[in-house]
Structure formats: C-alpha cells, structure tokens
Length: 64
Image 1 (tube, rainbow, N blue to C red):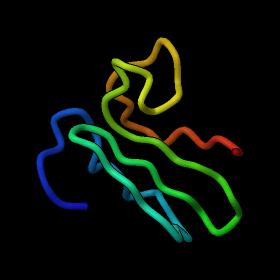
Image 2: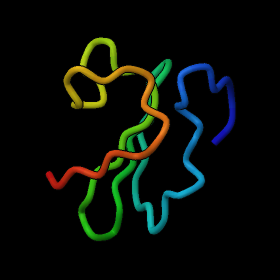
Image 3: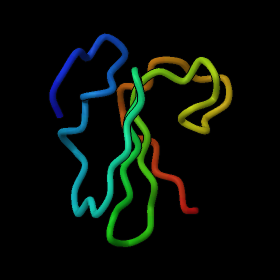
Image 4: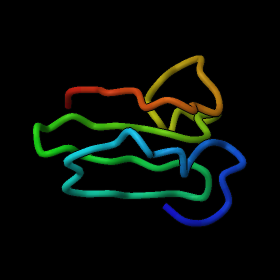
C-alpha cells in the first residue's frame, strides 16, 4: 500500500492471499482467495461495514 495512512488505510501488513483490492479516500478493502473481505481505514460512514468503529487499524475479516 502507498499513500497517506492517517486513518490506517495502508496498514495492511498482515493481509495475505489477496486476490482483489478496492480503495477509497481513507479506506481499503481486500478480498482473500478464501472469500474473506478485509477492511482497514476510516469507517465514519460505514464504508468498512463495521458499525460503531472508526479508524480501523487491524483488519476485520468478514465472510460475504
């Protein structure tokens, strides 16, 4: 990951086996080969699909 990391959106060191990535201004989503979605970064509008959390620094695996 490159760029500003003010909200943890580039804190992806633990992500493995990523097959797809999408990013916004202050968040990043990754899809693993196993089908798990990982989210990092700003979550003030629910863009990481983790209600009540802000500025996520550790990945939050979700099965979609």
